[in-house]
Length: 252
Image (cartoon, rainbow, N blue to C red; front, top):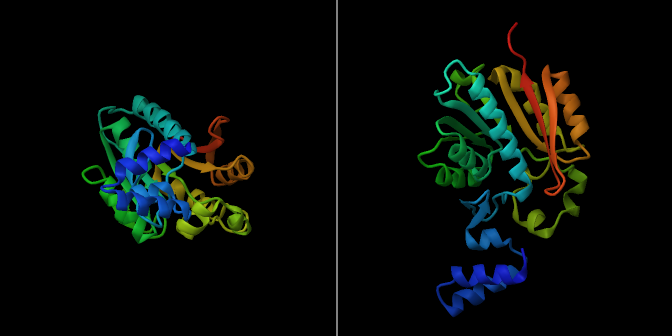
């Protein structure tokens, strides 16, 4: 975003010259624009974000588009295409992905989960009347009735290797929760855990989608394959985005 665009947003968000000066001071100090405004624009939808919460990135639009395509295919193959799709958004952060999927795929039965209480507070605001937000580690807070019946499992899990966190822009490194950024030694610790449990939650024909860096995507593909999923990748050079898709094979 250009400085002129940021200035216009700050002016529009300020109620007085004094308030504008305070907003500008925070921006100059390095606070993310989205945290200052209290919202982020994601896929054309205004998403509430609070200080400390992961700001949805434009690259994640590929994850959303790929999820919509996968869900549309699942619905077309379903015996009851009018039935709500069961969708789980893991590592949901602000709930941005779930909110956009709900707009595009209605009707759905949406569950969004995150371990960070600040994130789930935001997600409940963004998903009010849309889905159920639960707090806990990955699959732990999900209700048991979802076992083996989830159509779509979407996870924008952290994938920055621990040693590379310090190389990130200060806006992320200093102002977003570490748990939303740190992917462990090679960046794929959370991906491993998600892939290992996915078959237990997906229905036959259901899909798991995870965002990954271009560098780590081949290893993520191996993880998916080793856990019994049929795998493909989607990429968008303009967005610098890569998504790994794993499908639970249909019963013979």
